[in-house]
Image (cartoon, rainbow over all chains, first blue to last red; front, side, top):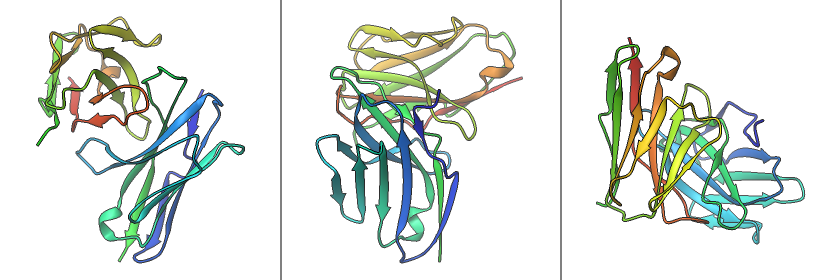
Length: 113
Length: 112
């Protein structure tokens, strides 16, 4: 039972354009969402998060949007740079006192110079 | 720099031979986690410690055990590794609920 889904295993975007990575979830109790970035041979690195009381959070080139009614979140990267090429994982947690994360399977983003 | 350190980065063991993976942190975080990740799959939580309280996931095999002797260190013991246990093992830490987890670079375990 995959509660967090990233339906696109891969995505290619031209340098300078916007990259949009999508994530869907099924558990309505999730209230905290995160994006992680992973380079080969390294552990995931925390990128940006959003709590369910917001619908948008921005940090530099990275913006996360949350649509609770659709149980959907997305990560926008603009402008995309070659160093953004990596695997991106969406993760979620829920219930006050729940410190566990449920991860999606990841989307491999390739930025084409 | 404060960080999460996993040793070794690569571990090879024989089928059925016990192996221990280690994780240390300088972040002084309350929570430490162990994940198993296989190729093209999501990281799967095996167990976590909230301070000294151990929390095992229901589907974590009995073959996997963990120890947290102090705040800084956490160990993953695999008592009798099978071929299906070959994977990347990730350690992470966090301050707790509503806080991001910070990951080490993982230990890639191979079983001969």
